[in-house]
Length: 263
Image (tube, one colour):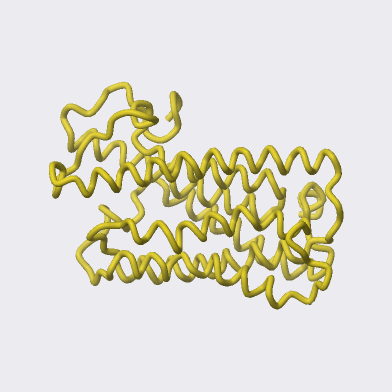
């Protein structure tokens, strides 16, 4: 494990502590790989159970990933921490994503309900991941980025921005269609944009976001988060695609599931 650690940015203090969290992170990835053959039981695949208001539940689910890093930055003992510190620059993409997901996106949802157990599991995960990302990155040594590190960071940020832009466009396009009375209470075939190539541009784009995040800060916890996203959303996109093919007889034959021209 020490050989792997040497390839990434890793805190110089509390190393055994962070090794334990990283181990849990990657055990969860293996778990996701094992269960990826079946749809995760939330959304259209959830059964009849207690469901909560979607907007409020979504805010509660996503907020730990925003509030925990903010709290840890505010209470950091690192007096040299500033907006341009490498640690803050590494955390910015993570917090920008969850600012949008927590404080903007939920208010656009319409008549959306979330199962209670889904909300509880999500709060546990976002609390764990929000803490790990912030604690790990804030414990990295603060040093000016080398030209190579800055290039890698900028490449990752560009990928992140592109992914977030595609994700937002796809999400709000689907929300707009769901609010259209013409499609009320039924499934429809989205047209135009990336929907001509894949069934789930939103899943593809969110995975792209976290790939950019992982490249930008090059930590084990960020790569773990990327792979967790990958093995959650890519299989889910594939299951959505098969669902549409089975339910909609005129679904486009050449359209892929979640990765253009590949899957």
